[in-house]
Length: 258
View (cartoon, rainbow, N blue to C red):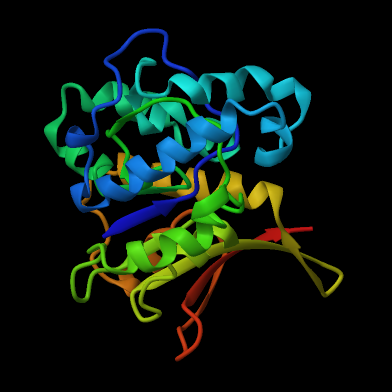
């Protein structure tokens, strides 16, 4: 089983660590494309209109400036570099700390794949720098990064036959690699009050992270099938499961009181 995560807009720069080493990253077949994106990002980030080109405000000027030195800035595991609601709910920092002395947990964190506008995808322990770049960005000659990465990721092996994936990503990152509809299970959350259902957006990140963290911390092996994944979710949440169709992946929905 694999767990598919979105990156976070906010990232925590490493204070110490090695510089970026493409050859140490997982999915080495993506390295030529990663280098092209990095070169384009550094170029755009040096422009006078860099903030506008990257779609960010003046408060993020330091992040954009850091983009110009990403090949020399310190790196940390992806699960420590990305931050925010999902990663906090997941207990990412504690998982990485425990994995230092737990080879089983190390292997599990390598089954966590974060999709990235800069790197295409990385696993949880890949060493990366904190960068500022969104998948929806149009990066000059490379175009919109969703469109740039889609054919490249389609050729990069992700799931073994019959392997399932819990998909906690947002729509931009799903667009870059939708995955086989019969193997990917997306996850969402709704509230029900007075017979009315309302989709939960922000807090869905929390529950996705919490559930992913529970799976990774469990003494049992990661679920090997859709049925087992749904059963694990039912241990802690009220859930609904919608099977996949020819055009849509399956959906695992957490139902919250209104």
